[in-house]
Length: 197
Image (cartoon, rainbow, N blue to C red):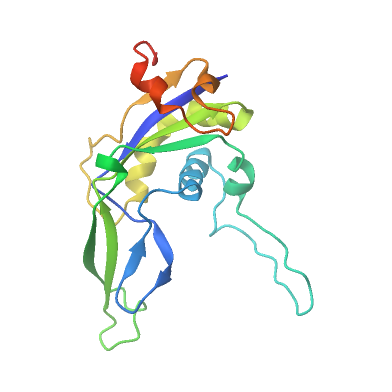
């Protein structure tokens, strides 16, 4: 088996936490697997939460576990997310912007002032073990579609047209770099000189 490695980085990132207070929307401190799978699903053309036809449960029926197409198809991928910021910590900053579409707020004037906590200059190395057809398809598609996807995904921030999100590497015998618990063995990357081809 082989693996692919790429660096995901940017000026800002926001991974919304479900808990919210009156004043701010909070972000997780790191990218999580579901957000990464959602990005991969968009690259591969799978449906997400917005396209999912949810089953309506009637009173007395048991809850049916349903997931979006991207999660159902990609949740078995072996992925490692390695933060590259100093000591693995990504600084956060509160961003303020107006949502003035009219229907965003019931207040007079229809202007909603949004306060979000954003990650500043996040950077991760992402490793995906190519051990199934879906991982192989992802490896084939990720280089050609990743840059275009990131610019569409990051509609709140402004990016330069030629801004890169990182390099894509192909790793031979990628399974050797994961232990029996599917944890990335980072020490091998520090030692290996001819690791990436």
